[in-house]
Image (cartoon, rainbow, N blue to C red; front, side, top):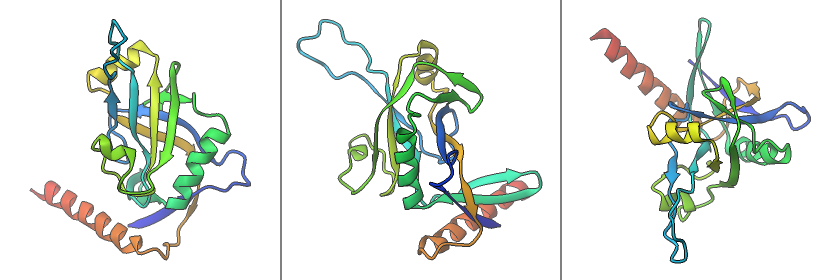
Length: 196
């Protein structure tokens, strides 16, 4: 099965991430967490912060895709993840959100964004053990219907929407072998499930 690297052409105006979708099953297989309000001694009423924190893109993670008859895996290098995170804000897309890549949403804004640089990252405080190079996002939810879905467990993570170029050649990074091993392990597991 082919493993395809997706990357950003900075010369192309449409290349990059247009929106972040809130979804039940994120392709990167990483759920976000919902942050609740800390207790403030001066506050008389505790209200929820309504902030979601999670991975928007994980570098070198194989993501299964199927297009008509073709099955393949895609992935993003650390460099592409960083470029995507920067261009997302440079192009002013922090308010662009959808539900399950279908319905445009209002009242959701990316309020914080960073790349995980070390094991002492803020994401570790919330038990989000993502690899170094991951693009993390915190999103404020000022949409009551969406927040109800988050609390009901119907929305669990982020999924990006964007335009990328692809490169069929495999990278020279050591991750190539890991991607192939991971992909083959998933295929073998699926074969076992369907043969039983």
